[in-house]
Structure formats: C-alpha cells, structure tokens
Image (cartoon, rainbow, N blue to C red; front, side):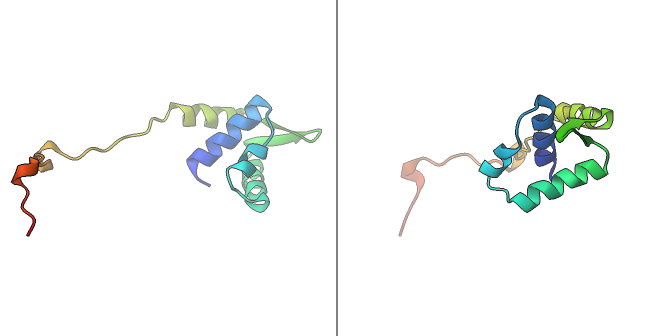
Length: 92
C-alpha cells in the first residue's frame, strides 16, 4: 500500500468519515477492502460494532505519516543553462 493511501485511510477513519471518498478517487471495492484488511491485520484499526476505529498503533502511525515532509529535488546550479534570447536561436 502506498503511503499517501495509507495516510488518507487512517485520517478518514480517525475523523469518522465514510470511506466512499476512496471510491470517488477511482479505486475499486476490492482494492479498498484489501487495504482495510491489511490495516486490521497490522493492528492499526479495529471494528467496534461495525464502526472502524484507530488503535494506538494506528494513531502513532498516522502521527508519523503527518510529520513526513515531501522533498523537492531541484537540479544543481552548475547544470542549469541560461535561456537564449529569441534572436540567438537559428532554425534552418
């Protein structure tokens, strides 16, 4: 399971929202319930009277995922080229 999907599922369960938002993102019924089963197997969520809840392990995993920042990799300045003026370009 991808990290962003895991994070979305855990946040959805924490807020008590429905998982139908995953259907609107284009995921199939089988994929979503496979991921939910995986989270239950890893003891991150549990069912209480047909309502999914986060365990302490799930809460700590969500906090860990929220702390991660995305990294943007930019090219090194030594490999950057200056833009040419339109008069400097020659097309045969």
